[in-house]
Length: 188
Picture 1 (spheres, rainbow, N blue to C red):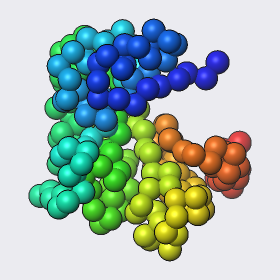
Picture 2 (cartoon, rainbow, N blue to C red):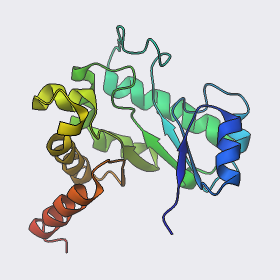
Picture 3 (cartoon, rainbow, N blue to C red):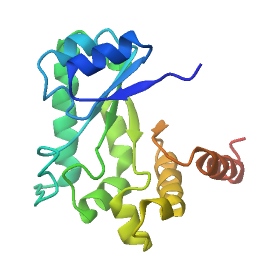
């Protein structure tokens, strides 16, 4: 069976989803929005801590970092410590640098170039770039439905940097591309 996850910042939603069979909580605020979320997430099989700067309605207005790569790393490290303090072992946690969440196009590219840094946090890394605006901007695809080729390219890049989990819309195309990459790398 494929494990289901729920993307939410709200403990009540996470609790209901877990009761309905979800096994992973993907908190887009990395336990920073709802004080009750850590206790709910501790009952899940897995927890994804995603980095986001700012609130959903304004996060893209003017995101700034001293060094996006290190600032995101440090923020995720702090959220990992909070999760562990709530009794969630690091082995059950994934981290997501949060492409597109309070980041400019250049921030996203910088994070993608150095994704391997996040393995230093000692847990699995998740990347969700599928059909995001920056993929369309770079790839010349205004409509999200036209961003599959660029999304697959980003997924391949992330996989080459050791990312363990890819969140994608186009599962078949991404799977095929990954199989070919593994064959060419001699890993099949």
